Image 1 (tube, rainbow over the protein chains, first blue to last red):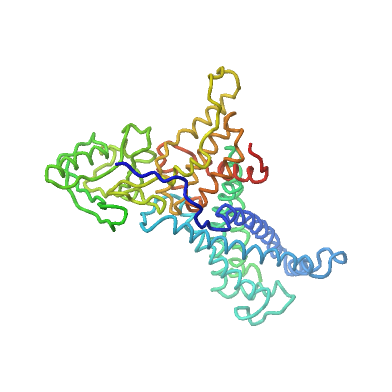
Image 2 (image 1 turned 90 degrees about the vertical axis):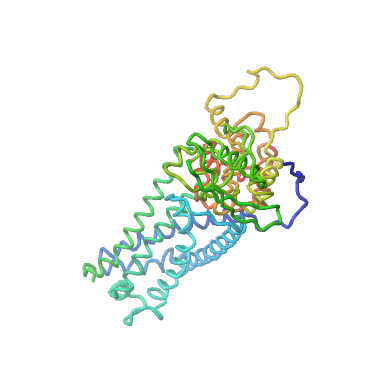
Length: 235
Length: 249
């Protein structure tokens, strides 16, 4: 069958920003998030050294660089960077998702049983869950409203944490979300490799291994805290 | 061997299309998918029914002309194998097959199982070539290249352009295809002279006509040429390089 071969198409309306740019935005903001979550987890480990250690750490976060940098200067700088990154990351993700659905066409195909594909499929739902989690987490332990424990007192981070995780549903929610965060990081870290263009075989193996280790460390380091509060080890 | 077939029939690009049921009673294990369709078409012609249209050429896995979706898998159930090399003996105890065209928004159906894969050609037009001065062939050892580079370039050059990667992709992306081309030409001395320009031009068509890559990895499951996922990384590497460098090479 002969097919009329069309020449290069006339300038059609081209989606902007390009898919390439959006993927780069996701990769770079993704690096910021992984870095932040990892450092946050290390800070959380202070809880194992007791109330004083944890509270002085929480206090230090507001004082970093003082008097060179004003009180809470670093904290607010981090918050601004994170909020901008979240908006850019989520917006890019949604635009790309819509483009992907459109490019797939009207016919759906049955899924292939592949671990990596499951990871990819989980990205949007787990991402939305993480967004909800961030909201709950801020209300619970930073702002102290709505879902916060009744005894919430600004400045006593350790007591707030113990009070919050003493509620079973909250402990379960935190620990379960960590599983999804770990899954999100594993696939995201892997995809970063693709988006930033690392092709060397050895580098890719090392990178993927590091990603899995980071995800597992974050999962263990964070999810353990609500579990230990429930068991009464942290009180 | 009796095989019940559910085959996609579509009279033209504007037709909605539907599945039709057929039965081939005398299929044999050594038949390939395409030979099964040939047998079906013999039957249909005898009955005075319009035969099922499908594409094929070499039937030995090198041309990239064939490609149908079998039971939701582009090319068929055997991994990394083109439709023409998929034999019934490898399908296990099978008595039913659903055959439809390669599915993607970039591949409109022309008729039955034949799709228009011109979108892939547009990627190649944009930069999947090397401008060379024709004339007397240079000496073979004129420009030296390492054995490893040659082997790697050949591995990426193995792409036959069948489009199964696009059909397999839940996002309708052609990154594996485009990445194989960019990686292949970037490794060779003549291709390297246009490396940046090629990456920018080719990348643009890729963005405009296909979906984004989310690392599902389903493309490599069906790729008859065994192109690795690193091709996708190579695509991004070439584009980033072309963008920051801003030069022709």
